[in-house]
Length: 205
Image (cartoon, rainbow, N blue to C red; front, top):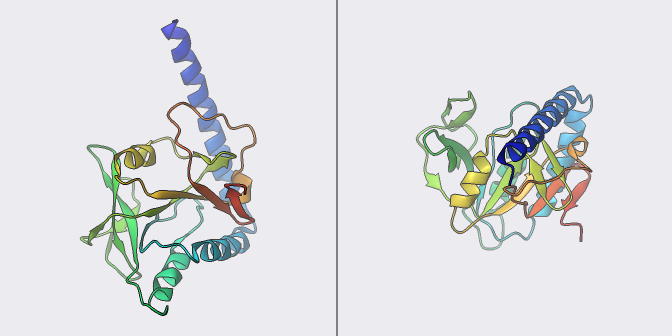
């Protein structure tokens, strides 16, 4: 096996992915109808959550024009108190472990005290560690088969590999993030579902 050739191929793939990331983020930030599309995805998300058995859900703090899942999740949390047998539902946001480069999830609620992590992203301060059974993941891009293009840091891949049991994973993104020709690499783990502002992208049936 020619290791130098494999290294060249890997470097080329990494470069191309980085170019796609940059283009998709620029498109997302420039979308003139981003607020309207976000409202549609809020509705898709709320409908999709109906009937899910989960009471602990992990999400993320939106950056770089990402869809904000927190309003829909706060509504989901409140709805849990109104059903026939009220549930205590909890929402978690990621806190980064700088040593292992993985994420843990800590309880979030509107108005809770926040602080910035090493990347300047807000995270809950001194709240309870929780373990989600359902995890909403931001997508820079995504493709058929449930594959996600992230920011390239590998935080979610390492986190999912470490979580036991593995949570049900759901990607969230806008329609412009769909990649027809995306080729997953061997280490890429498919998500269980993907939602965008048009509805359910994956699974297709």
